[in-house]
Amino acid sequence: MSETPSPAPSPAGPPDFSAKVSPVTAKDLPHSWRPGCPVPPSRLRKVTMTYWGFDKKAHTGELIVNSAVTDDVTAIFRRLYEWRYPIARMRPVDAYRGSDFDSIEAANTSAFNCRAVTGGTGWSKHSYGRAIDLNPRENPWVEPDGSVAHGNARKFARRPLQAPGVINPGDRVVRLFAKYGWEWGGLFAGAKDYQHFSKGGG
Image (cartoon, rainbow, N blue to C red; front, side, top):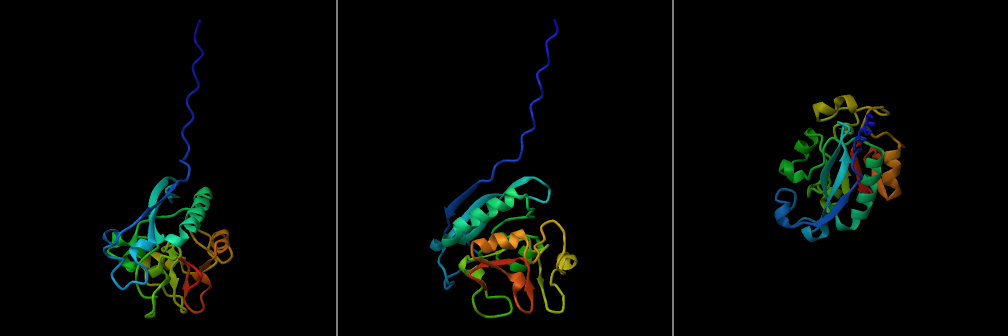
């Protein structure tokens, strides 16, 4: 009597979302923090979490944020992962020696960076760990004349635009951040900062 073959095991699906919040020190932030910045490292946290890539696979990334917003960040990125919203890369800006320009060139999603606000002299909300730049290639800073500083982002300058990872006015990504009190830079007067979300605006 021949045996009935066992069914082949089902392929494993993507892992569940996970997030871990860890303290950081000045040694962890050699390029993004310096004495005189508006928050000390003791008020910052590293959130290590799962994100969905443009390659349709799960990855693990890191964001450095203010300790007061770790619950927001975890909840928001959990939902983005559940939606399979694609994110190109997620590394602290120290991986780019604190260069916001180089981080954007690498299509990197990042948060804390002690620097002046773009085009001004006051502290950016990134300096407080209360701002996130999400998919900066697909969601660039666009000047009032429609120009962008990064060549890899030119085709993403107009809105609305239907493409993976793009954020549009009033879409579910904007509404998700707004649910937790984060404002979108795509609503700025003048230049538009489509990548930028900040807690409390600015």
